[in-house]
Length: 186
Image 1 (cartoon, one colour):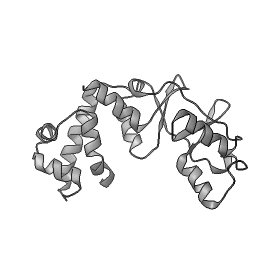
Image 2: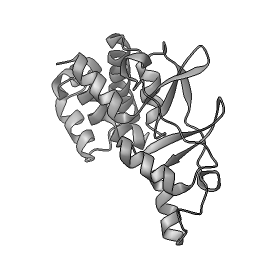
Image 3: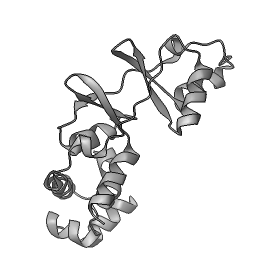
Image 4: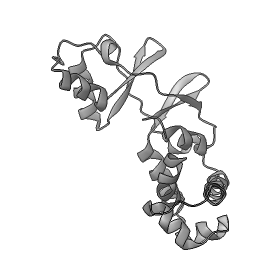
């Protein structure tokens, strides 16, 4: 629940809601919302739950689907590539993670954090393959799934792959969700 409380401000902002509007929808005071967002309240479970439920209801009401927020150009890297190649590709694309794909199958993921762990160990990035350092694959959801489903996954994952008829059609990161939500509410 702590992670959910910490995300209240981001979720509210992504929906274009003011604290007072969220408070009214949840039936709590605006000061409680402000205190929770600032990490200065130990509100009862039921009051926090009402706020989270109000956010979820608003997210469902937006009607946004995963396809509305996804980046359609998905770049992946094979597991036999060197870690230095992953770094070069991430820098070129301006991303912090990539899916690792072998043939048609997503077999893992690589992130800046994984590469930093290699650097910390003193490994040579030009010699280490991605297969030796890759992390589990990103979760996958259908492009027609509610955007809220991707948002929920992003509370614990670096990215979510979006599928169309079983094939990768896009990728969503936290930045994509916030961008889609802000465009919708401007």
